[in-house]
Image (cartoon, rainbow, N blue to C red; front, side):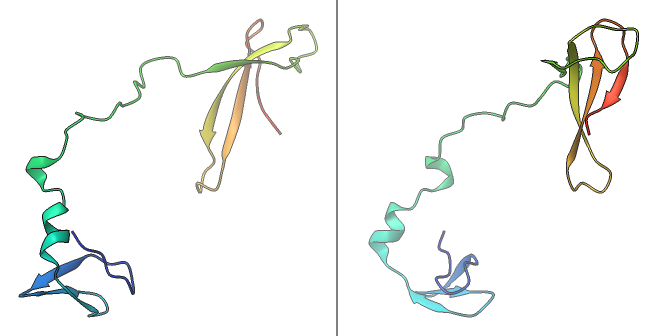
Length: 105
């Protein structure tokens, strides 16, 4: 596989030349360089990537005082939730003692 030096797009071969489909830049083919390229049969297969198991509890714990008036706990579990619009995440906390829920500000 060859990439264009001008625009970075993937190039294709036309006879003895590599040609960019985007900017039409051309480079001569080099047989030694092409012989060193990995082909699909020569590539290593590491198997499928690890995928998070959403059925498992993904909350973590931290030391933070519970804002509930009648609770003296200083531990809460939290999870990160994407903010609508995808601009950033919000940390939602739950007190491990009384179950009070709040959002980190």
